[in-house]
Length: 315
Length: 315
Image (cartoon, rainbow over all chains, first blue to last red; front, side):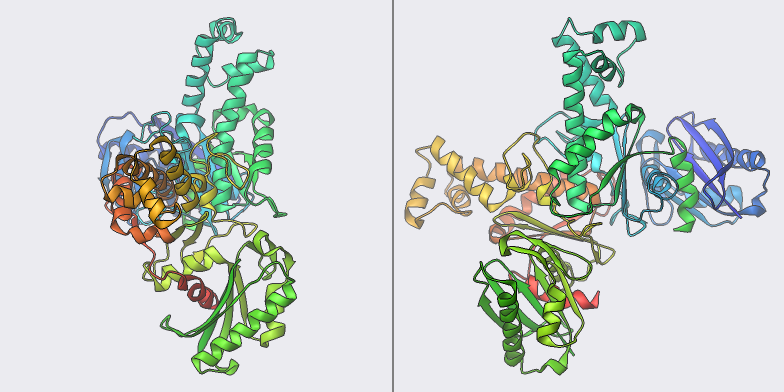
């Protein structure tokens, strides 16, 4: 038997047929093409699921259950209460999937939580039941797993470590607070920090790099650092300090077995991961404990979402 | 049947006999009198337990189990791995209690976690399974309960929200980090903030209050505020902002049903609780959720520890 995992994103809808060994047997994708009605979007979700089954060479009779990850808040009845970037308000996702795909067990969860579940079981977590996944992207997403279960709190909105203030009265955040971790540790924040350093350092090699690449991105400062550029080194060191600050806060709060760090910036690999682990070792409150939280790089990339969604029925 | 709860503190050892309705039937206490050997301290713990049983009019045959809360890190085998203020390193607490009190089931936990458990079941939590207890004292202690279980992580050192940085490169904390919540929201921090405001405002009524009371304490600025003193109002407003900052971080991370706030400063009651709830309502990430975390005042005072310890065997 197989499960279907769906990753409903602001840009694309992806569905995959996943087996017991977490292998993707077939996958399909279509643009989400917002703004449009939930009815239309769910019609396309069902279509993509059928395409994924075709690609995998299975039929709906071979499927045990369907799981879907979505942006926003999903309640215990599988209703998407609110998802800003989809324009969704109280969309009965579970019901709408059942209507289109038959009376299979259906599970709906927040997408960051699905990705965390995927990495915990099939990625760098290797089955770990105490696990936090952090994604350094446009924002800073996070998913928390304790005792093998997703922690989403009394209102299904939990797990938002990105919106933990690390600098009182600091940089404004999209959420309305000031000084959130997201406003310092996201790729967006790194680009802002890079821009500011370029303005302050007209001789920095970053100007050259940006001319060649056509735009500032999350790699600019790292590339400059590799060329020995002092301004680039400072941007990278500061950025890593901010990322570490939030990670150590998570360590002190929950002492998970593993914190998995994902997002495009993680392509820097050990350049990022090694100093992060050094910071954690130096600043953790659990300095006297032999066992320490490991900071690891996410392994599943964009597949974490569909694999995690496919796992929702099995946890 | 009854349970014994022990609260081993840096200052006092307290033991209580607790019934199924969380009532304390008998209680006894002796100074911890550190520094002295673990053997001597555990001899006194056993003595205090016997005195509590005498006070309750029960014998060891009436006792179902024994629970103890202690400062520091306690591992799964009931060994206190490290407790700075007791001078303990790898003290086999469970074994030492069994040696002295007979072969009853024995459970040992961190004291902040015991207090959280006590408040969750017998105090303001009213049985809540998703609950965080925060104590604003000399430091900022916290205990986290998710799905009815204490969260202490992979190395039993979790639940330390006090050592979450809320101000990167901010005030030095006793833990070695800079800018921890504890360094802004503890009673110690409030006293430091009050002192600074007094130095900057020689005309503040706080000087008079301190002369009358003999020393600066956590009430000084609140008392000045009640007299309309501008400097006092500013200290209180800032302090409440710092406390709220950490509470909202916890809300965004875990969305517990209740965050219980304890410690001497909570005697201010609604003066503290009302603005804290307003901050949470305004800044929570879960702005679209109908259900919101409630910020409540701790109800059990110093009894939270012994009641929570007595409950360790029942969860």
